[in-house]
Length: 399
Figure 1 (spheres, rainbow, N blue to C red):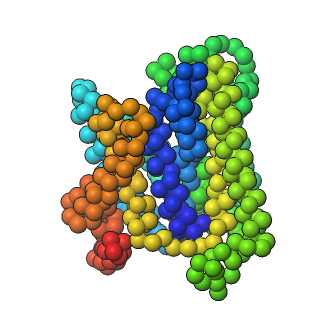
Figure 2 (tube, rainbow, N blue to C red):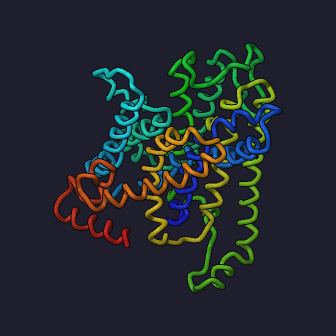
């Protein structure tokens, strides 16, 4: 997958996550007749970007694919420790202080390994577990049977979990393995649901997508039809148009049609879910088979695009996306006085502007770089030669 495709996917994914969190009141009202046009638009956009968390898991694997020989275990842990943990704990502490809850001695441990400081931080904890297991995971060679086994185990866990709520959840398109119980009040993740259900659901989807990203070079090499062939001689805008002409245009159109079909599957799965009586929140949750299929369709489309590097501004946005994810609930809380529809139009740009400002601050001052996840790029904790190389790369990204 090309660098520009991964960067744009990361930017798209985090923007969709922010939109979904801000517009949640509109989204959950879309199932009622009184929801109105804005609620229905919110529901469409919500489901359009629903695979965003799966994209991040996939991209986290892609980031370290093909680097087994170049990256030492100590180098990997150092880079991930400097990149993820300081800003994760910093914003966890900030959300805790805002909550006004009493402090427990084990709270930082729960923040780090369960993401308990705020509702959206669970994802960073999931990512942390995958990174802890990375030295073992990278030793597993790609085989189609291995990937299918992971997918099968994930689906199996997902089906088992559908029974472990107070009422069995629909598997897809409103179909339930059992009709026992009342779905009307069921909300996955609520206090009356066992924590093991939620975490098993996370890993049922997280592990296959992370490993697919980690195996991506081997997958493309083994299944050559996934990657289309493009001429390297064609330059300029006309050359780009010619790249997509002929045989490639048909294959790209077919894959784009799969993306459209994937979205329609996800949206109809959501509609049929709440029509069975399920609350709109779990009906439209990310942990669904339809969402995984939609994510795979979009990944297949992006893999087929020609190679290309990202301009500096796209790289900067991509790099700042993690800060956008961490800080956006602060702007949600600060703009509660606005109607959710207008709130989305304020929170999204403010989150990006704040993240970009913090990113520049982090690159300019080492102490802020350490706190905001840029310690790996500033060479903090590495050798002298490594520090110089990373600083040069950081300086180039600012231009």
